[in-house]
Length: 148
Image 1 (tube, one colour):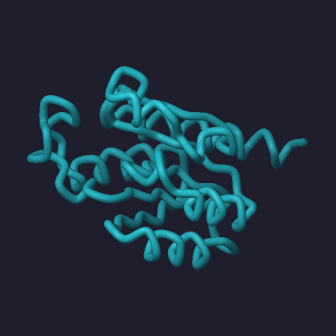
Image 2 (cartoon, helix red, strand yellow; image 1 turned 90 degrees about the vertical axis):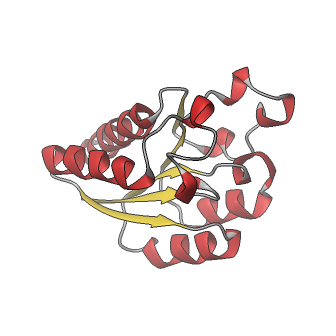
């Protein structure tokens, strides 16, 4: 089973960007933890990070036929991007939205997600564990789908 993991804008700055909000783990640290869990789950991961909405949409289209699902941290795009929602819907793959921080406890504009209504679920506020929980939950969801 192959799962795509997408890191949205500014996540390349993890570890130094607002550590009081996002923690001190770098994107490399996040990737290492995802890889370790993927190995335990016997899942192949293909990761992608971009600060460009268009490049994220291109990546989603590229993995449409090879990934069973997507774990995505849309970052700020989650609050604003109809194009990202359409891209996720367009690939017809289940996805889980993850956030390191808890958008519901932050500024009002961060409390609405354009993509959450179409997601299998959302995991937020647990730092790196949001990614790991999202990956576990998506993996379980995909296994259940195979057996239905």
